[in-house]
Amino acid sequence: MTTLPTRPIDRTATALSPQLPPTDWTDQELLARMLVREGKAWREFHRRFDRLIFRCIHKVTARFRAVLSEEDVQEIYAQFLVEISQRDMRKLRAFDPERGNKLGSWLGMLATNTAWDYLRKVARRPPCADLGEAQELRSEAADPFDDVASREHLGLVRAAVRELSEKDRRFMQLYFVEGLSPDEVAARMRVSVKTVYSKKHKIRARLRRAVSAQL
Image (cartoon, one colour):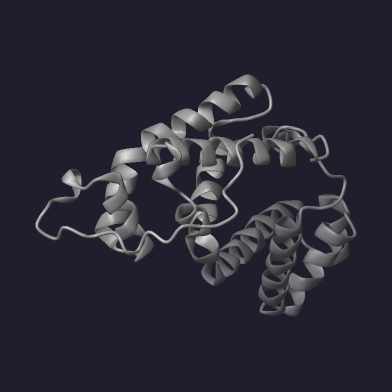
């Protein structure tokens, strides 16, 4: 793997040409403007070299398609941008055209190194299942959202029951809580079986309206 020169070279002294559009800048002038954090220079850098950088990354990742995805490629590209920006852009300042390299070749080498570094990190990761398998997971525990929603709904029902008459609350106790049959409820409350069915529907409708008004 190609290594960086031990003595970085300062490119900020390169003569700049303010009258030329960015597309006409030499690589040396582009780099000099990048080192002083000129926005136009960085935009020109992406226009000029992004395709090359991605091509170098894909040359590495293409061999490992079984474990890498396009998201990994984007992650490598982002890491590459971080690396050329950190420590006062040390890796960019290390570029030396006098060594016979072009700026594109230098950037391609840096991108390739970043891709291999990323692969070494991936190799050290513990094996993981595909994220899509999480959709099939089931838990024996109650769903927290459903649990909270049920408790809130129960609270609304209890509040609505407190608004009922004492006779209606006794009916609910016999029919819905103790589970007596319509005949048994009718006998306990001394009403007809027809009245039991009618009261059951009326109480349900009243509770439903009261709860719906609070949602």
